[in-house]
Length: 143
Image (cartoon, rainbow, N blue to C red; front, side, top):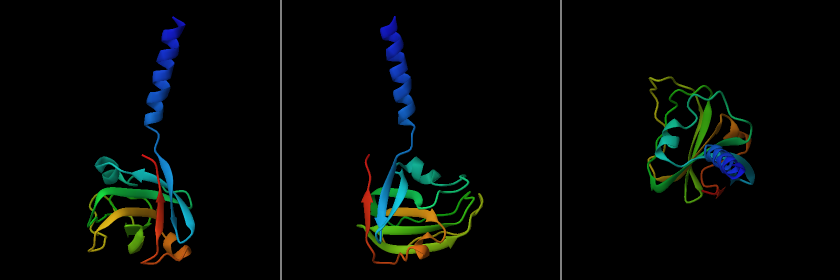
């Protein structure tokens, strides 16, 4: 009977681990930022909507399987953001100090160029660290 109990506990423990968000990092202009990954369409749609805030020097990194013109909105956000678009590890566009919007968002942000990764961080972060278009970002993550 103890074998079955141990097996049951193992299954419960492993099931709990699956739901834990992945945290990894991106290094931009020599500044590491701890990131939660948004890899699936569902995670990317949800993004940071509904959350109360982000810790300093952290963010959410959206990684797309194929580069595309990826536009973002501030739907149901509770705090302002900077959003940074990357293509092949180079910053191609930065939208700064974007205000939160409700369900009826009006603004759409993004470049008219393809990006394969997008980083959301607290408003002011890109100015604080001097991030600019053309700088490199080294993305480190595990799937």
